[in-house]
Length: 215
Image 1 (tube, rainbow, N blue to C red):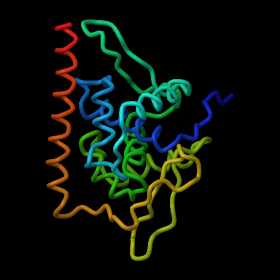
Image 2 (tube, helix red, strand yellow):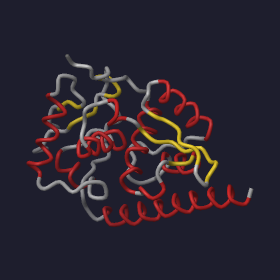
Image 3 (cartoon, rainbow, N blue to C red):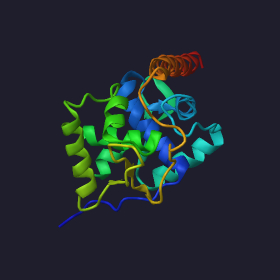
Image 4 (cartoon, rainbow, N blue to C red):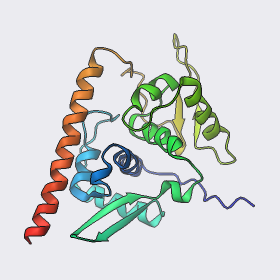
């Protein structure tokens, strides 16, 4: 008997918040679960995000409440800090392994991508052994009893087909047709900006912790 929970249809805001929580669990585990301030900053990053957004606290709080009702997010309190923090429960609700969560995370945050693009963008979260290795995980996600991703038709001149996640239903999420996600001269700059943004998020978390200790 299959007891897997039905895959939800998430709003664009829910997709962004869930994707961010998946990402930061891997890239900055020392600051995870995330405070509201760190989560808002991560949602609004200028790198590793398509499209770039500018959510305020109210938008993220409302979205977190909606995700909690779906069982996808839970709060964490206690210990030395009284600040409420947030973590995702995707791998608790669904039978996916860490490498598959990384793929879903990248599709949530960056839109449809080819296996090559996913491999390039996954470095800070998971090192796939090869493109064939990554493709096998994509096949598992696409061919599950309840698919998590689906393959899109190839674009003209593109050797690889792209994949999209199905957490927004079958509607095509943000498409990067006019913004090719190719590795090139901008990749180094993006990597630097990503590092700076991660450091800023870490400083926000430290500031939150210090303010709680002072209060």
